[in-house]
Image (tube, rainbow, N blue to C red; front, side, top):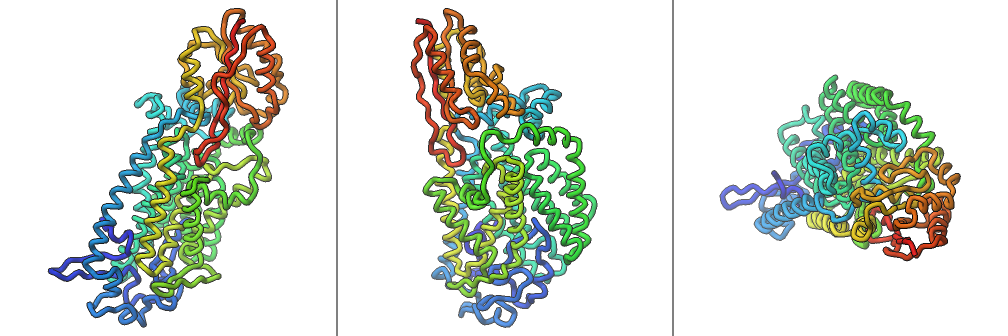
Amino acid sequence: MDHAALLDGRGCDRRGTTIVPVRLEDPPGQTAQSSARVDAPLVGAAAPDAPATGAGEAPTPGSASPAHAGSASRTPAGGPEGSEDGGQAAGCRWDVVAKVGVVLALGVALWLRFWTPSALWLDEALTVDISRAPLHQIPALLRDDGAPPLYYYLLHFWMDVFGQSNLAVRSLAGVIGVINLPVAWLTGYRAGSRWWARDGLTVSEQAASDRRGRATGWAVMLLVASSPFVVYYDTEARMYGLVILLGTLAVLCYMSVLRRPGVWSALGLAAVMAAALYTHYWALYSVAVVSIGTAWCAWKGPHPRACRYALGALVVAGVSFLPWLPTFWFQVHHTGTPWAAPAQLTAVVFTVTQFAGGDSDSGRGLAVFFFFLALLAIFGAPLDRWRVVLDLRTRPGVRVLGVAVAGSLVLGLLAGRISGTTFADRYTAMIAFPALVCMAYGLTAIGNVRIRKGILAAAVLLGFLSAIPNAFLSRTGAGTVGKVISAHAVTGDVVAYCPDQLGPAVSRVLDGRYQEITFPRDAPPEIVNWVDYIHVVHKANPGAFATLVESMAGNTRTVWYVWAPNYSGYGNKCQQIAQDLQRWPRHRFSVAANALTSDTPFEIYEGESLDRVRPR
């Protein structure tokens, strides 16, 4: 494994006492035409190319073009830029440092994916409660929840083997995240080497392509390993870690279709895209954007045969979704996202900041790097070691990949505005990996090796600084509230929730000895029914709910009221229930104070209050 190529784009070969550094740029003799024939033609298949030359474009000034490759960067030692790191031997010592850094980074990344002390919050607890139901009941439960089924089936079988503890249910996402690391390397390697179009290259061109691939693979894998966005969802008992992996596999399978157009490679792409549709509905937007780009390439692109197979794969994926379509149609009309308003198009910028780590200081710093690298990826090319030229026509290398990422996001936001559904950063998990590929490609626009490796190292460090707090911060107050109830309540006490969205996480901590009921549906706490949710909330009577709770408690039982204000659609109904309970001949006092915010970077902290109402 060429760890050194990650940071400095160069391999060091010891021959006796001589160390021969080898440039990562296209070798002498490679022409613009040879570069063009390995360019990525399709949406989702664009790849980083050599730092000196964009795929399919003429060499930029100062790059290693055929006319200058033998002289422009030649040193007395006979190798290109042989003294760039202050000496060849010193350069290879830095390679050792790079290898150690990669090992440490991967070790930290593995630890982060299996360690978080927080109790499960609403979405996680609800996912577990649905997944542990009998298999034949899961589709009906999901019909009222608003999600597709694939991850829930996987978690169902996972829990049969490993149990239902917090660590067990979150470990499925952690294992998926670990699997994604080598897949990210392989995908980055194939993208960087333009693997799908290497057959016509000379031996020297293939060697340069291979070095580019290794460099890109390690850079992409490190960005994925340290990404605070990826780390967060690799530690959550939800489907988003799987969606990120499927986004990686989608790019990998698309390149396989380009490399070997045929039925089997197309079926692989169809299977991945179908799995994405059955995992999260935002994959529909990626499939739509990629299908449009692929259809255009099948009509006018340089690889029409591969494009036709890819388009056929996308059609098969869409057809495979038809059995679930009635459920999806019901969900669109009756579930939606009643807990928030539709997002503005400014969420495009918000998404990049969330990829970088949210509102933390290190996250804002990483966002600056990401915006900078994205700019270089689309517009930049190295002029020499110290200068970068910006081409307003954009660079072909990741132009179509950038269009796929931006197009999926914008289409999703527009659809949300039209349908009245909201946006959350986690919905963009499908485009997280392609976006990180674009960031890694931006590094190739920097001709100075030290600056390039310094930027990558800084990005990885800032990523870990944003991700590490995830191992220590709580996502919900459910654990604290549940422990207080368990320590002081007696069998038969009443635990009431308003809104019902607080029920799944708190009830998971309890041991089932209590009478539990939720507002607004007077239902048990394990499952939240989202069907026509706002309409049900508006019709619910808080006074009647308080009377029901009082009748359940009788004259001897204590009422434990778990509640929070300001939930969308509720107005002051939860506060009114608290006041109504106090009017009865009982003492009401606060046990746990409400907290609505915390330092968690990606989600609003799930805060809640606990009132104890007992007989006088």
